[in-house]
Length: 486
Image 1 (cartoon, rainbow, N blue to C red):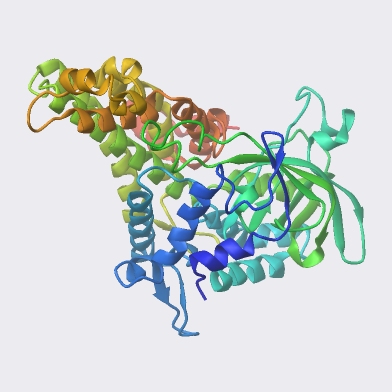
Image 2 (cartoon, rainbow, N blue to C red; image 1 turned 180 degrees about the vertical axis):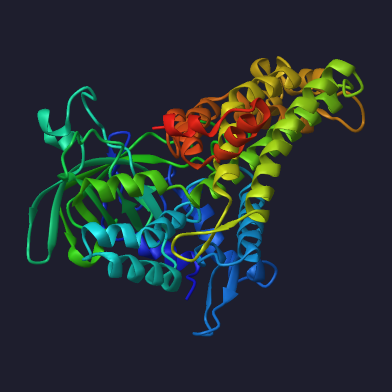
């Protein structure tokens, strides 16, 4: 059954070892740098129970008669994807910002494992039942499910075994109960999530068929031996009136240290075989790229809204140069929207019998969204103008000595008074010009995989045969050239 927000909070009060800014955290649900984003995740759970949002966030399982989360439902139809998109849109509006690691972007990685069972069975048939069990458990129990990918890596010119072995997560021994692992992973939301799909990074295995670094498993984040060393959060660094996004939707990353952590065999999803690990890496974002790209679409709407309100309040929306910049933002936004819409409209059967978004359209949409993001943020800065970096903070607007002057210079007319202008400028600053904004830009760039890997996914999924055949016919090339292809 879908949990309530309070049940989720209680589930992460499990004594886990969390540090932030040199402080041992007693309770992540109440710590000022974690509480805002924990409250957002709890709110998502509660939305599945409230009458106004229940039908958008959940569905009734035909076999059990129980309500389950729409995000976790295995996708079999186009309507399933439309429902997932509608639920994610609802979450983003409720959060009033972009939240990336809340679960729906991660469950798709488990579906990729489901699709890859035949390949995994070829090299090691022990674990496919574990995959099916964990998908069923996730659908039934609705945990906050994230994923772990990036290791500290160390010297990347060397093979993992040629340096400190802990630089990449690896198996140190097997026991009757499971495997014991050491190393570390960077994970967004790990300190306040329930479980993580932990898998190998893009590693240099050479020609090895077997490697202790080629391992994937589901990790209970309350397990003994785990230590969470979190980056300092943005929440609480400044007043909420000056930093509305930083204080509301900052998602905290952690270096999760695995200090000889035992993983039960039933939680191991693949192990040792580099062929299996490489296959999983190549198909990992088959589904999750949809949720990730949809986040960028929501960010595009925030950029457009902030920019347009700023030019409206200053009376510049009729200028052609302003309209051209807004049109550029709109073109980018609609390009993302078109790729998402087309990927569902032209969805294709997956190897495991699910319905996956059209892979070529989905991956190209992700690159369109991210490759243009820095330019679009700068366009929004231009449209918002220099006042986002020179406007005094909230305290100055409230202080009796300075308030009259700021009311005078920040009020334009009866419709745009100083308080609304201050709120708009503060929001725009936090969206595109703050420490939080810079963090989000870098996060978007690398959150799923680096640009070269995203382009590699396009290369593997684009149908090059059509253009080749077109030019062969148009140029009158003979069939002999087919023999020259390697």
